[in-house]
Image (cartoon, rainbow, N blue to C red; front, top):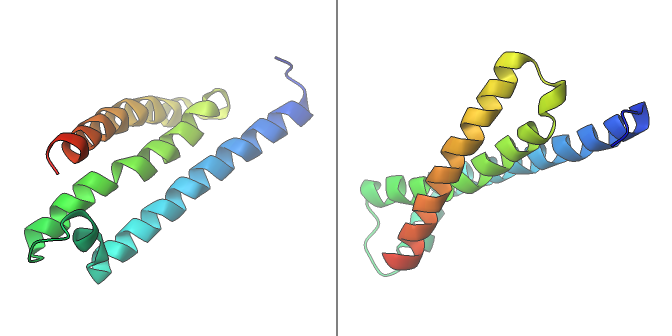
Length: 109
């Protein structure tokens, strides 16, 4: 890997794009949750109550969070030390959360 400024710029742009896509997905999930569409998507045959909204958020949020932290972890060498540590902790936490959410989606719902 070359440390040229062109390579660095391309990598940082790609990583920033990944992070922005994750932020956009997070915004869409929050919008769907506020409109009540998210709970209807995960629990189609039941009466929607507040608990279903919370469960749907818990199942949907890990994907955008994982994308955000992937974008940060890829540019870890250019981040400050506390932000790099936050990115590492975030990617591990969101990965575990994503695994649990996928397990619930596949085996419970």
